[in-house]
Image (cartoon, rainbow, N blue to C red; front, side, top):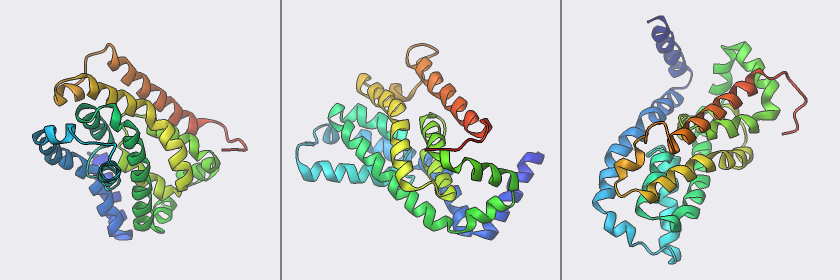
Length: 239
């Protein structure tokens, strides 16, 4: 109860400092789930049309990439769900397009997150001097943190983009390390989508075997990497 009250208090303080930033936090926390509930049935209802899309046509390919980038970049749909849907409905012909859409989405999310946060990120960190000092010490190794956060199958893409915009990680590092970090789990989910005949089977756990073990491995390595980032003795970074 005390933790809940503390969170509410901190959120009210964040709203006072920057109401737009507070709205953004709520948006990236809830909108992807709402978007999934609305868009997945729509996609399934038009599955025949989507499966027949011709990606050799430049207009079709570019349009599909931009739509995917907008859905992820504006937190209208989770990246994992979109990867599963793309694998299920479009197949491997859409994989490169998915990676490109993911890259563009990262730029979109980082740009609007940075614009919304402005100086409020620094003001919020000022309230936690120990955290600010730690992040300042580790700033040169931010690429390592980006990689392990992106590798995690449970940290939302939209929320992490907002975090990195507050930390001013830089879009180049976010693109480079973020894309490398997201490839393993995105490929796995995409591959799952290509194998199954029902989208619900694509997103359900198969139990603690097969891909279930891979999910646990990604999650464990991600946790280890984030823990190592914040606990490793400060060094002269070269990242």
